[in-house]
Length: 189
Image (cartoon, rainbow, N blue to C red; front, top):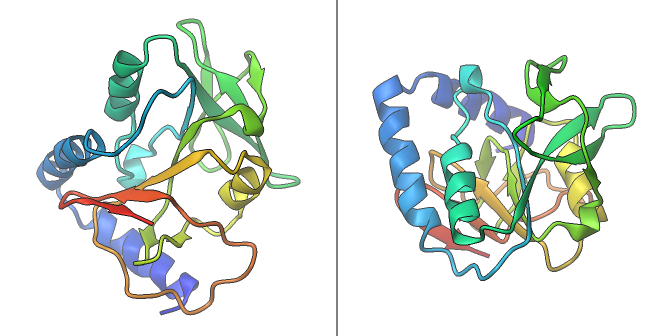
């Protein structure tokens, strides 16, 4: 299947999930995330879930990572729609958010962190395959971010669904995950 078909199909599959299913799946994602072989991390990047799109809830996972690494900083992205880049702002109790043109909450301002300083990133996506390729929303924000990051940054996807066998139209611009966590298990690539 090609990326455009995958985007449509998995967007529809997520929207068809009930709130009860999502709640159970998010609990199972947390259980399997806690089994990942992750050591100390000092800077954690995460997306803020778009609940109306029924994205997996990354926020409890961030809280658990902060509990495990109390000195760690959490950063959230702010996109630049002109060049499809992102800036990464450190979250604090005073961080204010506003929705961007896609309805995604973003920090308004704060202390910036460079991509190559980030140790672990939770990456949004619609689907993934058995070798760690992901299908995002099609703008390339995260592929650009990963290309600017350290080779040691741990890239983790969250998915309510198991992997596809393959994605037909991958290109050199696409960046792979290191792990993907599903309600059934985690996958290491």
